[in-house]
Each structure stands twice: as C-alpha cells, then as structure tokens.
Length: 287
Image 1 (cartoon, rainbow, N blue to C red):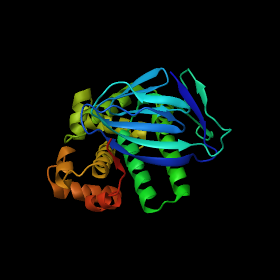
Image 2: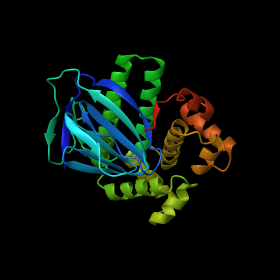
Image 3: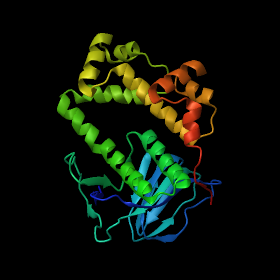
Image 4: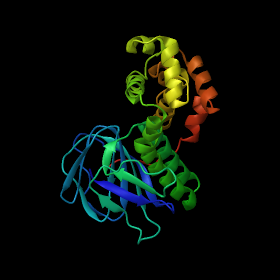
C-alpha cells in the first residue's frame, strides 16, 4: 500500500476545487502535467486515470490522492462524476514522504496524518458536505485563510475516519467484531426504516442487550446512531443534488416530509430547505 506522510503543523494551501460531471460515456480525463496535489472523491461511475506509469480505477465511495509532479492522463472513457480539490504545501521544503507499508494509527496529538494514495471512504457523506462547504466558502468569501484550513480539515477528517475512530473503538472493548457487524448492517440498510428491535433480532440478541452493548462501545445509543447516520446522508443529498426534499426524506426511510423535516431540524438546528440554501452555490464543471 502506497502511503503519503503529511505534516500538518501548518495548513495546506488551497488552490481550487469543484464537482465534475462527464457529459456522456465517451468522456476521458484530460492529459496534463500535474504540479500540485489533487484530491478526488468519486460519487458516480468509474474514473480511469493514470499518474506517470501507474493506472488507477476509482469507484464510487473511494478517493484518490495524486501527487506532483506527474504526468496525469485518462486511459479509458467513462461517464462519471466526482468532487476534486487541488492544494499545495505552504512550505515547499515540507514535501510529503512516501511509504509502501500499512500506516497503522498515529497518536491523536501528533502533527502527522498518513493517508493511502487510494482507499474506500468509511463515511463519504461527511467528506461531500465538507467539499461542498469548501466550494461555497470559496465562492462567497474568497478568504484564503478559511479555504486553507477547510482543505486541511477535509484531509484530517479522512484520516480520522480511516484510523482514529477505529483505534478508539478497539480500546473501549474487545468485542469489536459484533460492533463492526452492527455498523455495517446499519450502513447496508440506512435508507430503510430501521427499528432497534429489528437489528437485535437479526443478530440474535434481545433489544436491551444490543442497545446496552452498542452504547458501551460507541458512547451513543443505537437509535441516536441510526438517526445521526440518516441525517448525515440527508445533508449530503441536500448539498449535492436538486432532489425534492420530500423525496430525500422518503429515500432515507421517513414515511412523510413532516417527520423528516422535524427530525432534521432537531438534529441540525435548521430546516432541510435552509440547510440546502446555505450550500446552494457550487463550481460545477463539464468537459
């Protein structure tokens, strides 16, 4: 596994970002000399892209981190969409170090983050919201200090998803497998109505045991975790699409728009329409 070792004592320098949507199935990525870092988060389709002699296929829910300098080019046509952001270091001497090992967790108070060049994102919805926030703040404020810290936050969020949260869970309890299985099951069925009793029955435990077990491991109740995951998904859908709000609520398991709107406002302090309005502006690119 190719790992990039970043030093984050100072924020990265943000250059620009956007969301790309291919016009048709014949689109192929441009050929260019990449002189800064490019961070790609796939949302639909597959991206066929290469860096010098290394070819990548990036699937929905995965990211790719391309490092400069390199000869970047597409090697196969596809219809796809993805978020992208370009950044550099403020200190040009502070280039990241490459490793070909499993990074393992790094101490929480460390000033380094280690990221694989390509991997699956545990919570892509959270990254999509942050990338949309980055675009929105860039359009509205043009404040480079804000953009630099937001770009750094995005990569730190990714690192935390990949390593920090898993390490904290392991130290709390040795029964990691059951906890992981419950989380995977919730993610699998997050768009459905998902009562705690149904989860307990699926894993062969009573409702009281599974609720107590989950809270002991994660620090939050199972019901609250399900709601949090649904709201994270709703935020990503509100920020990333023009889908009707009632349809979004229905798609994540709410029976009607009233219940969805009340749950969303209770969780976020905003109505779904107000939340969407705050992320209305974006840089959408076609090629």
